[in-house]
Length: 395
Image (cartoon, rainbow, N blue to C red; front, side):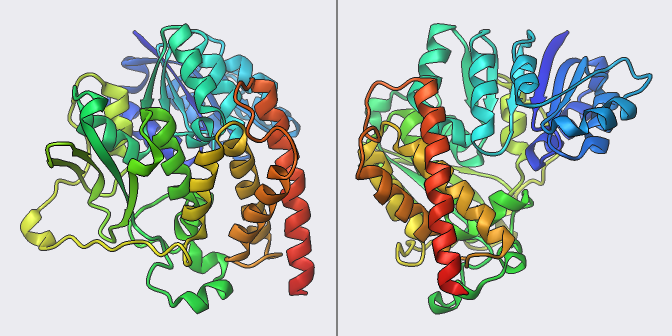
């Protein structure tokens, strides 16, 4: 029986993974080793029971007694804290979904790869912060990484058996998020609720706001550079409001391969779960006549500064990705808390990168996991200072 684990099981990607596993037979078809979640202990325990998981781990150690109570009599072990999550990744599994949001997903993903597993990677931050390390670890332990972001799954599928030498460009599509049709001058006053009203995708809170600011797309541009090894100049972004084409690959003979599908993350999750086979998935089939048209427009970097900043990150490489992601996470925290405005998020990130690039270490070429974690901590400190400064300016 195939052994699986799901990290970040109570989030949007984790819940959709559970849906597909349950439809495919649940405990009768899969042996669930570990499930991990955040603060929603009740839901974590419910999923652990339904999948008959060996262990359930919550991120917050304070919640351990509640998790134990919720799992009482189930036979599922309970644990809590970042170290327990990392140790859960050491448990042998054939396939692991990595869908913890943010830099917190890096360490368990690295630990899983060290055991030669197949890692279904929805945690784009791992590649952004430590792409070289992650890929080197997979290679050293004969592990496999399968992309789960819809854009990178689309690229992976469009490439098929094509050599990278034949690739002329990679085009990432972006919905533009909830605020895509707002006048630029109005964006500074956008509220959290307004940024969360995504017209196409059903996603978690943080990624939905990152979609509106295009920070999610900026991370995906860096992820594309790291995962596929393509020159940054060959990576393009285009706004595609319908979210039907998930990405495109252009080849040197002029051919353009597009991956199309309804905006449903179960496409890419199911592809990674069933790979190398293609099995039936419970997703809507496209009716092209009903769609009638697909539209595209170029993004404005004044409107979306994140797309400009990610180019600088790719130029620097080294630890710049770790700094970029950490600053983005802190800026988002402050926006959610209401202390800074929507457009201040990119300002916080740019301020942080400017401060860090003035000192040594950001462009370090040979990096370790310890280097990445240290830069993550430092960048969070600098970003918090930058956000506090901007908050005082708004007061």
